[in-house]
Image (cartoon, rainbow, N blue to C red; front, side, top):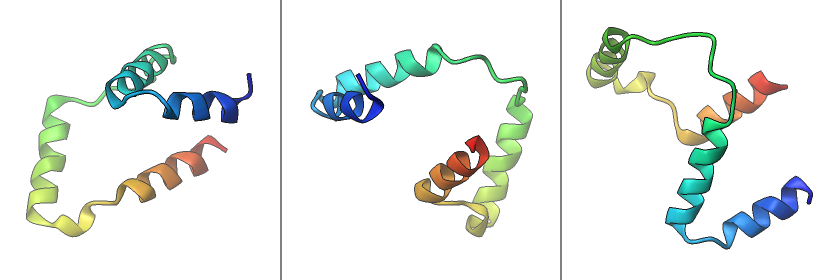
Length: 70
């Protein structure tokens, strides 16, 4: 089955089942070669609270991930 066909079939699933499928797929990927500490996360949250302009949209995130993957 091609990726587009698989995606079309997955789109037919209820949201909770799509979320479960996404989690299974993500957990099947290799672990990243980096870690992010709780302190780093909190620092980024504070930064975003202080300056919302540092935030990006979901579309910008996806675009950046696609660019990085190619």
